[in-house]
Length: 207
Image 1 (cartoon, rainbow, N blue to C red):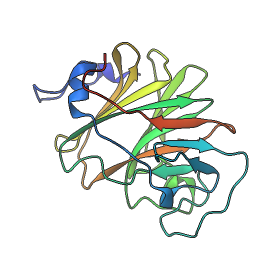
Image 2: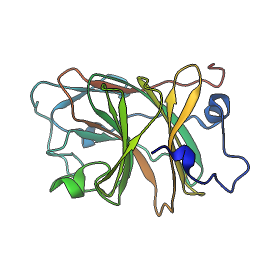
Image 3: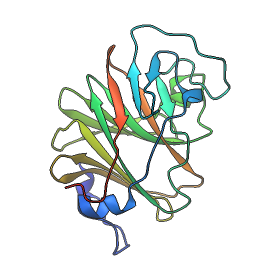
Image 4: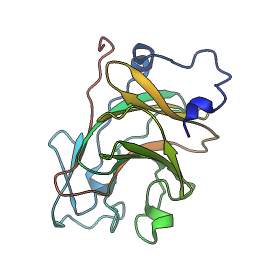
C-alpha cells in the first residue's frame, strides 16, 4: 500500500517538491538523556550509532531502557510545519515521530516506536522494503529504496508524510490525523552493530 492512494490534504499549500519541503527545514539534535545504553552519539548530537554491547550511561528517567531508541531534544514545531531528512546505514532503522510521554520501559506495545498510539514510524530495511507502523499495525509500503528518508509534519493540519529522497522526493506514506501535543523525532535500531542514522544538515539551496 502506498499513501499516494490516500486523499490529498484540503490545504492548497502542502509542499509537493523537495524545494518546497526545504522551506520548512528544521535543525534536529538528539537528546543523550533518552539514549538507550546500546547507542552512541556523535559530538554534534546528530548521529546515533548502534554498538555491539551496552555501555554505561548515568541513570536518567528519560532513558529508554530496553528498546534501542532515542528522541530529539526539542519538539518538531510549535503547531506549525517542519521537514527533516535522515541518512541511515545497515539493516532495519526506524524513523519516527512520537509524543514525549511515550513509555521508557515496559512491553513493546508501550515503548517501541509505531507500536502504540503515541508514535508513528517508518521501518527501513536493506532488503529494499519499507513498513509504516502505528498502533502495532504494519503496512507494507512500495516505493524507491534510498538511504535517505524525508519527514514532513504539519502539526496544525494533522499531516505527517514520509518521503524517499534522492535527486527528487517520492511520497512513501501520508497520514491525516489529529495531533494532540508536541511531537519529537525518534530513531529505533533493530539491526546490527555499526548501523547508524544521522539527521542531515539541510539548506534551502539544496537540489
